[in-house]
Image 1 (tube, rainbow, N blue to C red):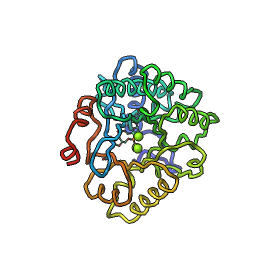
Image 2: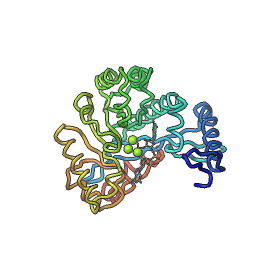
Image 3: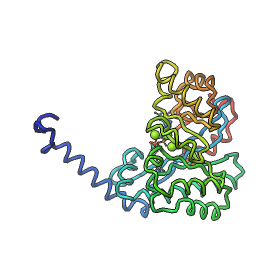
Image 4: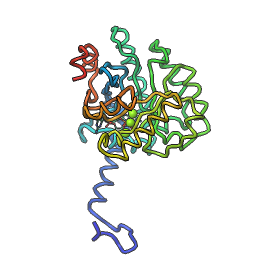
Length: 283
Ligand code: C2E
Ligand code: MG
Ligand code: MG
Ligand code: MG
């Protein structure tokens, strides 16, 4: 609102700004207690084979139900939690809950291969992430391959001294390591050679425009070519239409995730989705 800006761009006062600061404070105050109050839950979005719709993995996505603020999506609170450092505790809870859940599914004999968990760059700084994961795998009697960790390029940019060591330790545990939202960040291609990465997730920013938008098509082709030539797995995010699925399939992208197949599901819904016959599952 230009009325509230002085000529040099400083914002003097605006009711919106005050409201935003108020919201931020409220979110941060509530966040601090949210783990103890058990206000988080995980939903699971299927990752499916683009050819026949078979579920190959699940991505765990956090949801926050707060008595004052209602249900909040992660885009509204994860960055606050990163700023305050609360993400470390939240992230530990997410890892543990995802391991508990995948162990339960495996005990029930469901065909789920693994669960992917989003990891913040803050979970690297001064935290022994690999040791935490090792303890959890042991506790729930899971092979490392039951767990996938998704990192954004931010982790690579921050480049904490321990990053390479942590990646190598996680790889040695058998954990699958993936770069999330690939292409949105800095496309630091040199890291792809240096770090023991298994796969990339093509950002939905680019999936969104295919097959009609020519530059999105070009980016998808380029990312697909990078993944293939480096021998990396590739998952397309944000697949919403049959036309997108067809396009990605033709490009040789093996796996997709998106509302065309399913949104994030409760554990029960997810288990039921696993049991659906494939013709119906991919419809
Ligand atoms: P992400 O890891 O890239 O997750 C994909 C996001 O896209 C999810 O949003 C998902 O619900 C949404 N999505 C899936 N399919 C479609 C689609 O077809 N169309 C569209 N338009 N969107 C789709 P969500 O659950 O709101 O999560 C947002 C972001 O928050 C995630 O992006 C991830 O970066 C972060 N996040 C979620 N859970 C966690 C967590 O446990 N820890 C951390 N550190 N970050 C998390
Ligand atoms: Mg993710
Ligand atoms: Mg993503
Ligand atoms: Mg994202």
